[in-house]
Length: 260
Length: 309
Image (cartoon, rainbow over all chains, first blue to last red; front, top):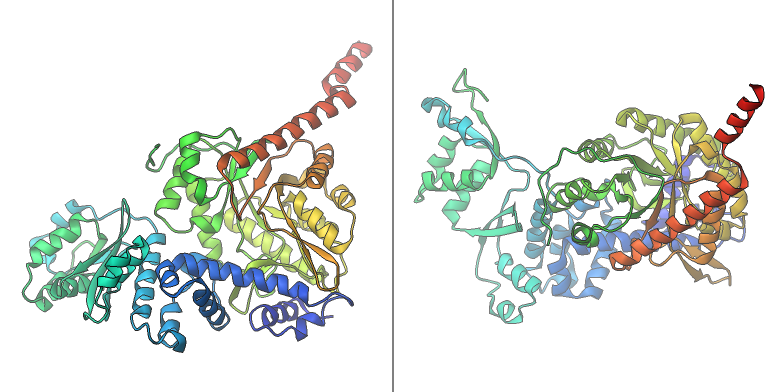
């Protein structure tokens, strides 16, 4: 009699790797392997739907049939690791990068990277923004040593192609805007966050983006300012704080006795 | 258009022995706007594990409707153990929503760290029974509450199964103290697919353990060998035969919270509400029949008392 684990591994081989041999041998005589197919289809359809929800612009760019074909190859290679499908598809952009049939769409992996960041922002946990009075209460000599905890919805992204313009035009169904995009216009520097009206994708100038990236990465204000060139760091910092992009802060050890 | 309100503090009530509907994202705004005439709602726990809009809607909706959390990803039947991170995500949703009921499935979805995104059939063996019971114990400890477990709909069974599914369900409830979520449509579907007697299945369930009933639509698919298989796709109305089985369930269990589930080709909200209203009508009829068949216990006691005096 097969153990439970043997049954489950046999089913995995059937549903993910399309190898029915072990599972079919566990079925009663006369029960066809087409019953395994019912489950295989349900799994494939469910996971393809999850990817469609996460990557709607990619799907529209390549068409439903192409998308489903790509998903059908991706899913067996990288099935989900957890029962939380809102977080399924992290590897899909890199899969597309190496997916030969999509090679002519050089910007496609970047659109997918943007959609993954948007998806993470959409499903990120809630968190109250930092109480600015706490920051103001810090002794002035400690303020430079502050590093921030970003809101869970916040991320920064540098992409080689103007994926934000493509993404917006595709989701708006704006063919004229899409046609006007120069896909080779060079890199874009993006900040992705969730506001009251949904997820927002902001394009920043490179120096302002580098400053935001450093703060999001947990570098101290002092370090981020030192690395920043040609930007009004006070104004940028004030804007980040006013937008509620940070939820907490720590004071670096160089300033002993400070509250974290 | 009703707007979302911030997190509320009003505790929602328990799930009443009335008809409710499965709440899906498509109906979030309609529920706030229309305040439909249903007694409670059930959501898939996994859809509210993040923050943002979905959770904000659920916070608002739970002001007016008791909420049941129905999990689809815990994989109670996994040979290798439960995903502690997933239990923790469920615990956090429960902490926020304060559900009247929580439930999961007699099924499995995870093996070797891969989530197979479906409720897969278990072999009905002593080993699987022990695994499920251990995991139900673990979940009930982690959540500090009783859960309900739902009988599966299945399209295949394993040759080495030794325990009838209804006995398996009863044993899980008996050994762990959990309740049973009796999915009447699933019983109908599986009875067709495996050739057992749906009414006998119902009769074998421990009445006291049944804490909720599910109803849903299903479809019929022809297989290559000429046989048909019923597919539990939650994409249509409850069929007449399943309503008939529900009447039998009501006669046996009495009134229990009853849910209309609809997950694919989701119709306008009023269609769901209409299905729930029909379940409510059948519940009232069953209660009337039960009352007519047996004189109220209190009257008997009073009569006995009068006689003794």
